[in-house]
Image 1: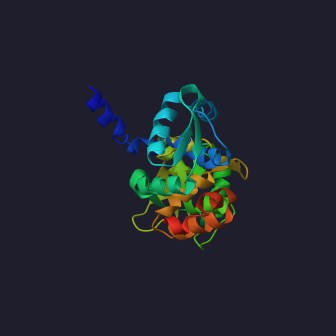
Image 2: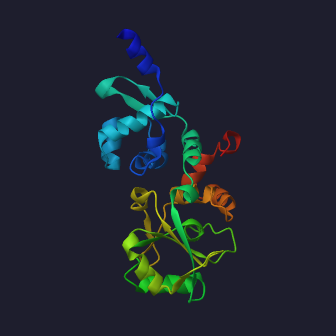
Image 3: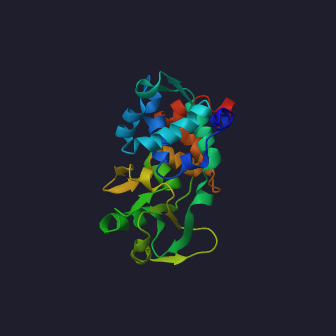
Length: 245
């Protein structure tokens, strides 16, 4: 029995689940809040994030095994220390790609340009069912680095798709797009999105960075531009060049 216990305790914990929708809230908290803390407990993190302690424990176990978190103390007095935020971000980028995880629909519109489309959205009942994504989100964060005039939207409620198509006069387009509609993988993080410019919400900066990083249409260029100019990203990526981010 002792031999089996030792083998099991040395085995690496399952890792893929820590990048799922709910557990990603914990990763987001670490990179947004935990990075500034000298130490924190499981219960403190769970309460702050609003998730079960058991979920935090499973995610922290993987991160400790990978050397991203360090621990001190035992049981209820155990404290965690966030040692390598840039490695966590690097690992997250290796496990997540928007083009692999999200369904995307490309359209042309009967309206002219992103600004007109946004004005129509603001006046409609759909403004709470969509979130600006990718380049449109980067623009809303004040970090536009391309001449693209396309509109990219996360659609929070798939049942609203037909209504969105009617309101924006959308027609499917096989190549290129004027409007890109995305079914989100990280719905929980999107609920943390900011409200900008008359109730049109935008994807949080960290998720926008993650989405853009593997996006084929000038995504990496835009992600790197954001990382240089948004403080919450810059502090995570400050060692990124030498660590492959």
